[in-house]
Length: 294
Image 1 (tube, rainbow, N blue to C red):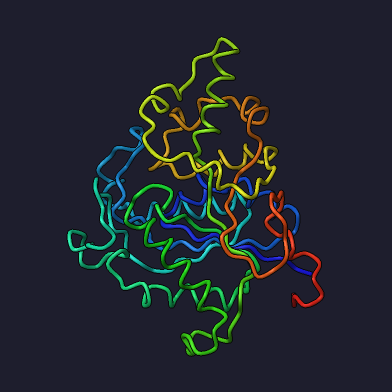
Image 2: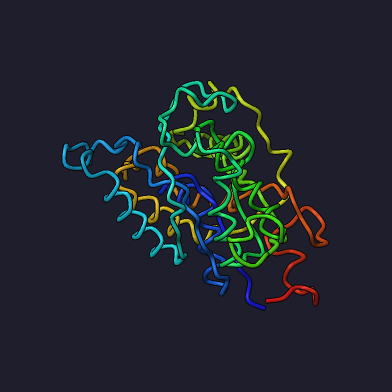
């Protein structure tokens, strides 16, 4: 049986900071993996000071597309653009009132309309498993929250023959997961190990101002993918406008990460197959059933 995994992300670079090692592992285990990127990151800032040049800012859309191509080559995944326009970052965003966002942006598209291209892509690719963000979007960027809403709507609609009849023949994905990568428990474990080694931790200030729920108790599935952390980091560096190669993301030695937290973690939120939690495989309950068509 050929297994297929789809990861739905808001911007180019999100696929490399959330679940990248998981995808790299599954690709190398002959799983077909497709990243659906909702927007082009058109309104993103240049976050790497080494790339802070006028010609970069003026051509950010084309540059971010090229960065995405390089990242997907490193990870070995396929990738599709859904074609929406980046909403931009706002400090305090209320999904119930997106009126302060640009008229043409992703977060202002009604969810029912925004879900259609994702439904079409699901029906074409036929994933068994879909990854997306939780209700807070992982962090409260308008596009991340919209990605969450659109993913839920598309997961339910893709298998409904009465929904979006022009988007292709129905296909029902079997499992839906939320990324749970940035939990306080993970950050704390790595932080304490670094201090015990007599090393400086980049996480001290972050932990001091941690003001959100940990969410560790929501984790149902831990995918061991420490062997693929180098590929994850290489894919991140490919997004050179967004990631400083000497910055925060790369200050913890991989050996420490593998020792203290060699998994990427998820919450199973929808399942149409029998699988018991905790899991160590996104395809638990999918790999063998005779009633699942490849």
